[in-house]
Amino acid sequence: MEHFPEYDEIHVISDIHMGGEALDFQILRETGRLAGYIGWVGQQCPEGRVALVLNGDVFDTLAERSTGYIAIERAVEVVGRIMGDPSFRGIWDALARFVALDGRTLVFVIGNHDIEMSFTGVQRLILNRLAGDDPLKRGRVEFSTVGAGYSCTVGGARVYCTHGNEVDAWNYNHYESLARVGRRLNAGLGFDLREWRPNAGTRMVKEVMNSVKERYKWIDLLKPETQAAVGTLVVLDPAQAKKVGDLLSIFGEKVLSEKDMNQRLSADEPVSGSPGPLGAAMPVKEPWLGPNLGEASSVQATANVDSLLLQAEKNLGKPLSQLAEQDGQLGTGQLILDRLTGWMRNITKDEALRRALKDWLADDKSFDLQDQDDTFKAVTANVGQSVNFIVTGHTHLERAIDMGGGRYYFNCGTWIRLLRFSQSMLKDQGAFKPVYDVLMDGRMETIDRATFGDASLVMNQTSAVSIRQEGGQVVGRLYHVLGDGTGNPEEIQRFARP
Image (cartoon, rainbow, N blue to C red; front, side, top):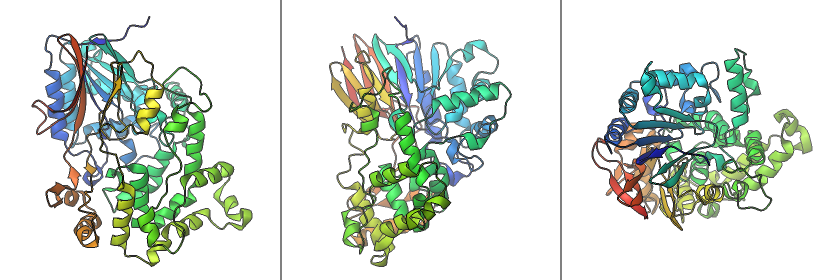
């Protein structure tokens, strides 16, 4: 029987997203609070064993302008730049103080924005920054970078932490390819970047979203990502929408990732028709444009992702020049652009954006703690009954769900900014106009300051999960870290397991 690390308590945070060479490209705002929180965790249970788990997307190398889909020979340089950035230096100082304490363990779990963390050179860089040559300190740092997550026990309860992108076909890491790159780096062999196959989400960020962020810094702060961010992109910058259409291989890459995902979280092979990640992680019948915009459109504007996927699968491996020639289709991207933006002839841009947001946020459950979203369904379908607490991240959206039978699921949310549009902001064109003006200003400092009525546009919410022994129980909590991070967090949801 395998023995897992035993702790008196663990604390889990996710999606810190340290990265971005310019301040307005950095989506992590509460850096001082995070440093304070790390210090607070270090002081808990002084005589016991305490772990701090950074549950994926610790770095955001995709936000670095100097990198492509992945930094390989330059991985150490890129991650070193992020660690040395004045914006983030205090966080690394706090982590160094944490690993200097007896009975503390710091765990790095890989996400989909920090895949370079799988390289041994990057791991050594992190160890040197946090622990120097001290073997005791170095022994308090662990890495989980092969997609297996991190398992431990607290008071006899088994805990499993995983980022969550393992069940997301858009953002699935090709771990075998990462291992191959790592082997070549260790062997002193070069690597041709043209051989690297990025996932669909990475391509979307680097080829499309980063260009839009130059003007609209807030675009990747929207939730839910699929409907809100991509759809808003169509409204704000139709030229970028055409690029998405022309990059049919982005959709094709999603198809390939769906075929590659082999129920990464379990030891079993995928079973046809099973409720595993292929079915649960990414439903494909989601309209790009909804009924409010449809009312203003003179053309059919509901190009479904599933039809694009089918076309992309047929076209995999074919150059765009060949696609343009076949069947007389001169640029599939132009066809998609025409379908998605026909309404622009009949509606002003501010009203188009308001209607789009109303469509995409209608019946939205992004901020419902008990919503059993796709990540919940796919992860829990692939984790055994012996696991009592499951903790994910990736979606940036908090969850706290009692699964019954003494089993509990948490998503520990994020530390980056999140935008939240209230219904009063979207009520009508007049109410939305001040919001629209702030968004069109585009600067992050303007977004940060914006308030409408009693509501701020940017949520002041930094989330964490703790699981600890308390008397004869193991108690799991979702909480919000407040102020400078050094005080007791605010409890949002509590589950106690006898």
